[in-house]
Length: 173
Image 1: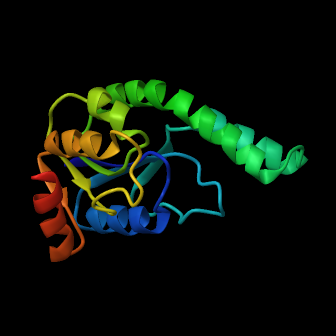
Image 2: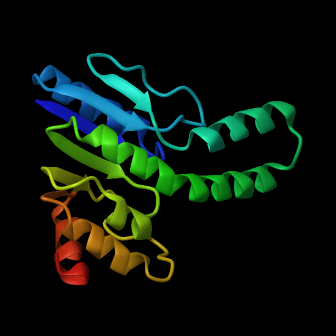
Image 3: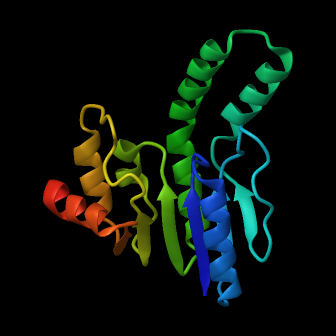
């Protein structure tokens, strides 16, 4: 079985590594599809493959600007976020083609829920780990987009009974 773990913005590299390693040791062929991690070296892939198919332009910008120290870090962050916002739809469309090979797609994090719900690869067994259950400070329309995104999944993973109750109660999932 070929499983893709997707953490588009590279939010949780240690978690992704542990999950990918465990699935690979259980006999699955695993690919972690993510983006370059900006804040130190990510865990090294062991029995699974890693591909950095998301946010490549903004990662190069970040690395170049950090090396040059050409502008204050706050300005660099705003520019990098704008680049990521612009890259997200193209990266998701490119990922749709890549996802065709997977037997199961397990989403850890996606960039923009409002766009992701429309750009997910066609139906296949897919699941989502709702790490935060709901955004801590949702922007306008974000909770509704998250609900639509979760309804497109075949299964949801939450880390606690409390999280499961919140998904049922607040989002009707």
